[in-house]
Image (cartoon, rainbow, N blue to C red; front, side):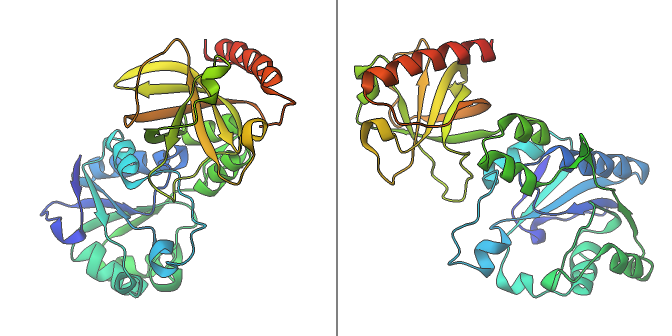
Length: 309
């Protein structure tokens, strides 16, 4: 897969099958679109192209709104899409100027003149262009004018529930990890840097690595205790992770993310760590003292071991 950081970088004389969108999460619904894109490219003896954008349009159009939460950083999205088998990925910088393109200008100037589209593959209920004015019906009107075909894919379902990035986010924010992972087609993950903590966990036999997530927009699942896989320097470890305010130790408004890595005792400060979420063990709760907390953590650990094994 070749990656381009703007539309202008992309040059081809081949026919292309193109799809466009945010692709946040690169989930199972996206995979259906991408699979059809690849098959369509083969049928037209052309190349498959995904056009996506970063920053996210809301970051540009509403810069003071910090409520946006995404499933992937742009680096994670590129990595996930790289495994799909597409030929080209264009990550175009989204700007206010770009947002003002009408749907017709987007089709004519971008898809046709720059990407050489032969077939456009879009997901269910896809909208594009200024104020999201473009639709499947509009594309059907433009296609014969600019000599390309349009393929729309019906809503994909898992257990009769439509897959969407919004539903993945809702599941994660509710702590419904199993549902989120099923929608995604992989285990949801966080990447961050290990930072110094107050080391209270060591005093009760459960040392933790405190994790700082560098991107403010990366979605953090609901508060609670989770069974997780930890990836560090290419090695997988079992562990349990807590997201919350640590009410038993010192309740405050600062949410922390800390993981106890099983059978591990190394200095990993400043290292990058990846956490894969497998199951929510329980909600965060306040205990009478550290002794009661320790007893519960022993129970949590045994349950985590059973789940991960």
